[in-house]
Length: 513
Image (cartoon, rainbow, N blue to C red; front, top):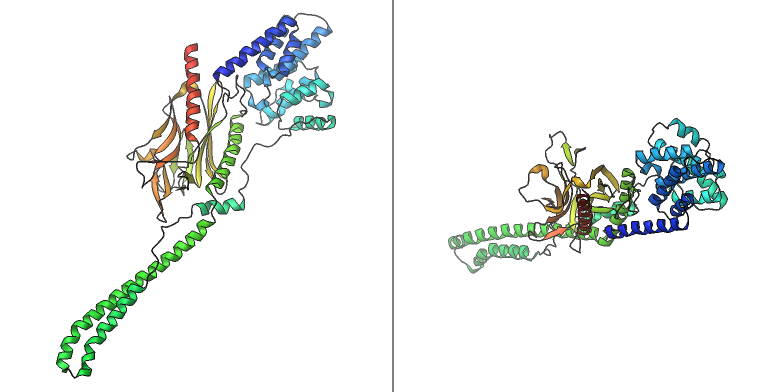
């Protein structure tokens, strides 16, 4: 993790390196090229700019060659080891100016072709005529050995024929370069996962008492005895009218005993049904994946979603510091999805508006949640928020994941400045919160059913505009009102890292002002 102090140290070391180079020579081209090889792109660009200013009026073929090479190297330094589509419009405009001025250098023509394909072509934008004409002359075979090594080291695979031609030439020269891969997507879930996740959330009822037929048998036997007893006196010569008087209460008792025996037998049958249901549920849940397997699937999905998020924001996931680079690894908060079944979801600002025939009334929550053996919550529908912290801004990617099918149901992006952040906190919502602020889920309470409850513990980032970016990360279980049940993810660590980095940037900006 690259924090502020280390970053300042890196800049100071770079300045020392530059000063040492200048002490050896005043050759800005040589010094800038050495810095470029070291990956010190900002310092290298400064050297090339110095050359272009201080040698602008030098005459001769050698001076002209030096200036064109400085332009080509400066373009490479501006790209700074990233894809052209990941750079800002101003930076791409500067790259175009440099390569056009270095049009006689083979390196500049190949850079022009990469910019054409990846920045303009990938989004269907019109390619500037001067860049288009220059890129048509690109031929990786004309690159010198040193130029080829520079491109292979300080560029990233791009979409389009230019990089394909460069990769083919690399194969011919025996040099390894990465091939371009289409933006990351979530692969189709395996059959094991498609079956296993629903089984994990199969409700397991409490174990019933063993079926017992004894009460029914005893009551039935007692009823038979009560019915027969009055008539035994017939054999003793008892008068019929006395026998009849005695028989009445015994018959009533027998009827009652028969009734209670039938009731007891029905309870026995009900217990047998419950026992079979419990055994079936036990057999089902015995085949469900372990907590560890569920966590492994989630970790793999989060990695892939972070790659998708980086592509959506056109950010490099590597921590580089400096302008445009990340100051810390992408931070991912994982919570429970607040989508509801049977609704059309439309993204509006930082929240969702529920649209449907019922005029937006609450419907059945989509997410099922149960507690694992470790006391952590796991869900079949997750809400995932990836936070990128760069030197200048905060970029957020949010999505809802169907965990069993491995499909993104929704996704959205948002970007804002550090000054727009008002607070970062673990937010607890009281039970009396308004309906529009309520996140409802179905929670396995251990009775064999899923009870609809609220997610009342949330990781939230509030903005100066009044919007709030948040994800539900925990609940107060119905049977544990005083204890918090948290999602099986390190959301507390994510909160600490984001909070520390955001406030350090805000304080630095305040001091600079």
